[in-house]
Image 1 (spheres, one colour):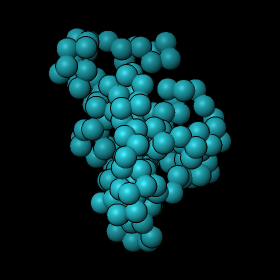
Image 2 (cartoon, one colour; image 1 turned 90 degrees about the vertical axis):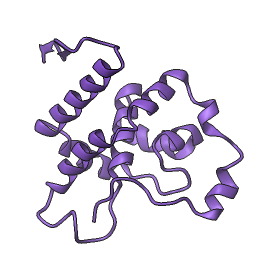
Image 3 (tube, rainbow, N blue to C red; image 1 turned 135 degrees about the vertical axis):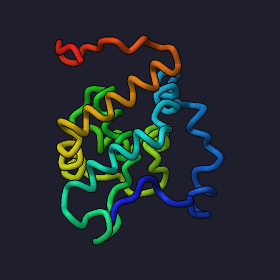
Image 4 (cartoon, rainbow, N blue to C red; image 1 turned 180 degrees about the horizontal axis):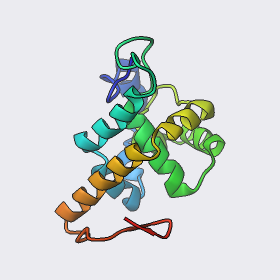
Length: 155
């Protein structure tokens, strides 16, 4: 069963992590990315890719990794140029990264899970994510959105 976001935080999480305020300790560049990733259309494109993995994966089975966590962890991986193993290690040990990925006191997905989920966001799914990011950038007047280069390919 797939979810868009994690559910409500428990009382223990609020008591344990509530007074640390990791959002204030976040790097300004990471904070801007955090604001841009708070987009439902972006999450829906990731969720659609995750639902396409198996025919009944959207309705059956145990709760999987939320689409928001997958997107944010993959963005962090590419931003920091980490391997999947380093990604798991760094997110487990850093409260700011946990907050950015919307994990807080929850379980961090392991490297094998992230490899599989990263392979789902390839081809058409990745194109949908890029198109939505360009729309957001045009809306915020960061770019005009006419041409974009991705790995020396004009998109």
